[in-house]
Image (cartoon, rainbow over all chains, first blue to last red; front, side, top):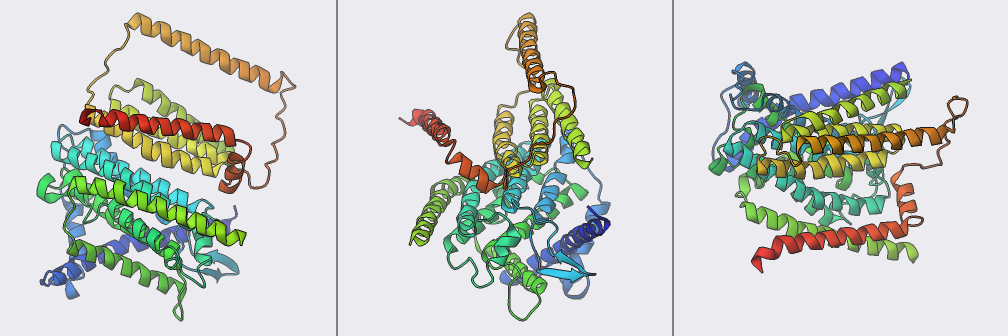
Length: 330
Length: 171
């Protein structure tokens, strides 16, 4: 572990950290603007050019807001809970490759914080830990609506994790590796969206449910649960939940890009630019869904996860395994 | 050096978390400290070159099973401990099991090094691909195929049992 390696890693960590922290306000602005136009409104336009500084202003407001902790809340858990989803989101981002290997000062630097050989399991593990932030936030508030929101989300995320994991397994069967960098490298000639289209559809539906985004945002259904699990959180604690939601959207999009859409592969433009273009399209897709679909009812959500997505992902896995076996024996 | 530091860190963390699992009064706090134990153990698995097991440990135990534990604990809303045994009986059982654990550990320690000269044995040479998903899969489906299949039947029985229990009120 030499000095150059340490510096290289530190710089990459800072780049990813800075990108997410600066990117999230931009995504929030994009979301408000896009939804505004889709609903025949203008969206934010007063603060800065095109309302670009609106999210910054909101951030400053949250930063200076009084930090309330309810008297009956479980103090320790209440303070720790908002940090958990942010931590897990950043841990997951560490294994997503955002560009090809580049030569800097005579060293080959892969544009990825770290290439672990179990990257996909690592991501599944960290996202499964992200549930705690929401469940504990709901419980620690010691109030009925947050608790209901937290319980809903824990059931939801556990149900959808299964189908999500199995949809990833069908791609792993084709690639024979769990490393995201290796999976991206294998897609130079053909993106896996072609042979594994159904796996992608299942994955992205589960991904939306995992990030608690509309139409699966039952954990914070404002029409029935006030604001769900984060009702009692104010100031930076609320901001952390907010940040985690958008960082997790980036994680889900980043995996979808790396596994099904060729990662940083693309003609003419540099790899990093291609990754950013694909990421923006995915985030736009998220916003588009939110503006289009009404929220599911809780029983619909559970029935959809267990009776549609899980059998579909298992069927896809079985078909993939049979086809691969037939292809290899021929 | 790094390994020794990390091992100390993870093992001390695991023991402290484990103590809290036992001594905390609030059931949710106990469950959370159990998550801490599982995460520390997963760190130790990585130090043992078993990354796959470490990831599965986080994914299955810390990420899924413990969330269900919490789910149940929160729904039951356990306020304090409900003593199952009288204090005297509890102490008796505790002493018995502690003694059992101690004897077991003593037996392992005495039989492992054979009372040798105390010099640390050379590190075992790991076979190629040790701990990788491919190698684990190969061993699991060849050498340990029978136990694996027995376990799968056991799990199937458990699943059917759960369905029967949950469905009973509708029949």
